[in-house]
Image 1 (cartoon, rainbow, N blue to C red):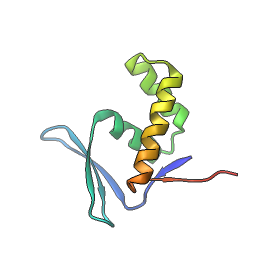
Image 2 (image 1 turned 45 degrees about the vertical axis):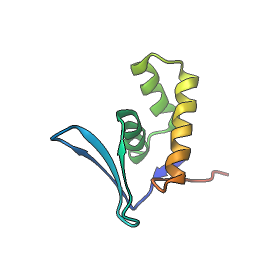
Image 3 (image 1 turned 30 degrees about the vertical axis):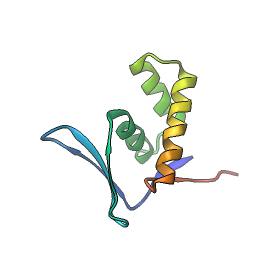
Length: 90
């Protein structure tokens, strides 16, 4: 299970449609592609990895297992970069 770091703010710049993640604690900022932005918005909305992956699989026409693997890989990278928090489950 992942959640968005409390210090992270997601924004879309209307003028050019770009997506950004800002860590207000560290001052770091990241420009995101559409898929990365949707994954982070998904965890911000407390959606499961499976729900996020299913939506992306349907939209991009890829197998569900591949989408789930890609979402997990992205979330692991976000956690390493301080954008997300991996919560251990019992």
